Image (cartoon, rainbow, N blue to C red):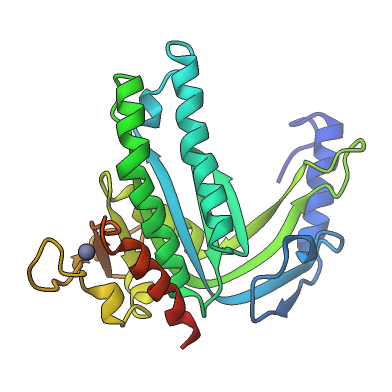
Length: 268
Ligand SMILES: [Zn+2]
C-alpha cells in the first residue's frame, strides 16, 4: 500500500481513483464479431466486450533498431512510412475490422469466420516486403531490414481505456485488447527470421484447403506442402506447443488468382 508521503498528493489521487474503479463490479457483454471501433465502449469504466476466437495478424519490421534517426533521418523515416503505411492500408483493403500500429510494426484483427482472409492479407504483406520493402531499404541504407509475421487466434476482451476527452483532445485513449491473440502473435513473429510467418496451431487448424496448404506447382513440379510444423513446447511465453511455419510468397505467375480463390474460401 502506498504511504501518504510516498508520492505527491495529486498523483496519489489519480491512483486512488483508479483503484476505486478496479473495486467496482465489471459487466462483460458477449459479442459475435469485432464491433466498429466507435462502438467499443469508453464511457462506463466497468463495461467490457468479449469476442470469441479473434484472429490477430502481427507484422513486425526486422532490423529497425539499427535504423538511426540521427544518422540516416530520411531513409529511416522512409522505411517506417513504407512498412507501416503499407501494412495499415493493405489490411484496410483486406477489410480487417480493426488495425493498429504497434512499435515498429502493425497488427490487424479478423473475425473467427475470416481465417483465409487473415492468411491472404498476411501473405500479401509478406510478398510486398520481400519484393519491394527489403530490397529498397537495403539499397538506401547499409542496414539489413526484413519482415516477420505471427498469427494467433483466441478470445479477447476489449474496451477503450483513457480519457474520452482531455483538454478538448480525444487522443488520450486507445482500445485495449486483453487476452492472448495480440500478445501471442507478436511473440510468434519475434521467433522467426526475415520472410517467415509463424502461426499457432489453434489458428492453423482452420487452414484445411489444399489451395492454402500446398503450392501451385511452380517451378514446374509437384504441388508441395508449404507449412512446416515447429515444436514450441520449450517456449514458456507461449500457451500452445505447436506452431506452423510458412516461408513461401505469392507465386509470380499464379499469386493473384490464388489470393482471390483463397479469399473466397471463408464464404464456403
Ligand atoms: Zn505458380
